[in-house]
Figure 1 (tube, rainbow, N blue to C red):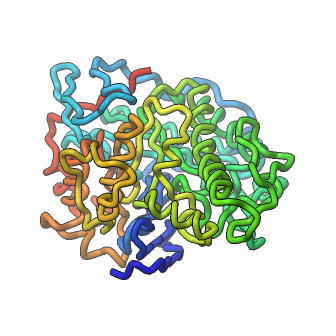
Figure 2: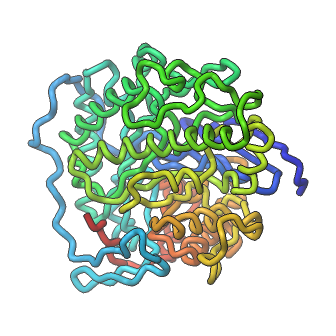
Figure 3: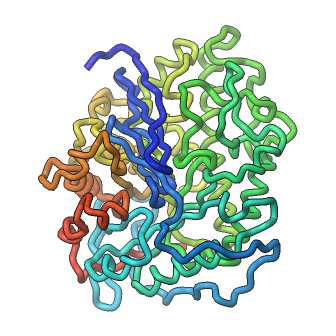
Length: 497
């Protein structure tokens, strides 16, 4: 493999799934395959935007839920008909973030023992949830679709809302934990009419993605959506919530390799979010003169910190609505290693992987609140690092060590998580024509086996299979996933407030 800094950026689409393929053939500059976090493929769930050429995807809420046909309403829904709070669990909490996590100890609930990693699916179908739960697949995932939920400002589709309620209730009746994707990246068309609504890069290119990072008006609209969702579904009913950048299905800036901080707002403009550190050098553009290396690094850390702030804003909003579970921060691929960051700064920050924000060490480091935060690898078994798992003693390897250059995404993000006291979980790349043989491979070298092996060796909370549909459409038999667990599997423990 050449060590020259060649970057290939493209978009991968499968049905309603959109993901980012980023391949960097330079040491320290590696993302991974194509996926779709937030909800992979047409099912809900992510599936990493970064990986090798094995793709994944995202998708809207499962079509198995009740019909969304119905009227729209501008009034908050009443609690009548909303899912009730599930029975409290007596499970033991996981080790507190900040401690050395290591292996997750078994926990018990009503005499049933839970052993990590849990198994779940992305875009879990209501019709098959009970069967999956009875075989030990204990975590379901559903996702909002903002464009369907609020097709016009303040007008909510109550038929779609009822379908979400029915979907949630089906998982609860099946005895499953439920993870929610916020679905902000399914943006309604009317958001584009707000001022400065889209990202702009240093070349003047306007992205198709809505800017949740630097625009407080966009965030306010999202806050109102989430408040409505809470009134209908109750955030207390969810075990985990998936966190992205809003405009994308993972915590990344738009693709292309450029830097997306050159609209009016990121230059400290009128809708700049309160609490977000001001741009230290407004007007300066990567690849140009005028700043020292230390100042360029300061600008870069501000740019990465803005992504961390985007994640923290969502977590703060959801917490305020009564959620006390886990936050899964979706980060794809290896990204840029510390040595690669140093080289990029020395070169004046040319376009490359840093433009997408994929310096996971610095993004996770800058999260202001880390309790119950899960470093979520949305590109497990993506081909990076030979799909290798973690090894004893990884937690003693310095983040700056050259040894990490050969690590897989799962191993690298696991090491970052251990450094900052975070929990760990992830998902495999979703199915695509490009990865079909690997995806359906039932041997120890296939995607399912390698994903589970990585999860076990890195002591993950659990793994979501992308996607649930493929377990039932003849692509991969559900029995293969069932063979990796047991009908007696316990529920994963709830978060400690």
